[in-house]
Image (cartoon, rainbow, N blue to C red; front, side, top):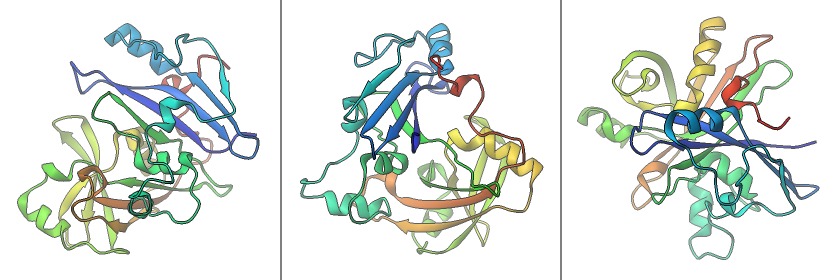
Length: 249
């Protein structure tokens, strides 16, 4: 039985609006077993944008296993022993002994040297509820007044979610707003489709709040950590469309 599931995304540098979930990483920390498979998104990315297979995973139709976390993922987080490790996991809202998979699920594993990022699969509880944490996206593109309001955020502060239908980059988006109606940024794009379905079918059961605010010199991508709680409709499975389905079953 595998535990936390992460997806690997790839963005076309020539057309940044094109991004695809290209791989799935399953982890079993107890058995020390890691499994990577390409998803339908990799096939779509290859056809639409010339996505090249990764050096670590050259065959799109192979089932990769390892007793250690694959370097492609391991190299995207700080490891214990680094002098700034304690500050790093604090920025992620974590503490104590932390697994790299847990860190990647929040951190995203962004690197300026390539076009890949990581995000976790939405997992629902038996009652249909779910919880996810992410760093606020796009806050540098909001109004000066909203950026000033962002500077006054405090841990535990409640936030609103709002559907945006005229986003210039993605058309639809999920805005993050303060209770005094300052739009301070957006939820990650990978949550968009599932949140739109869930919010349409089960409106009014969503909440979000500030977990932590990381001031400078923290990286700008780790400025504000947010937790979102919601409810998935009965019979709906998040992140289950063709893009997310492994090419190897």
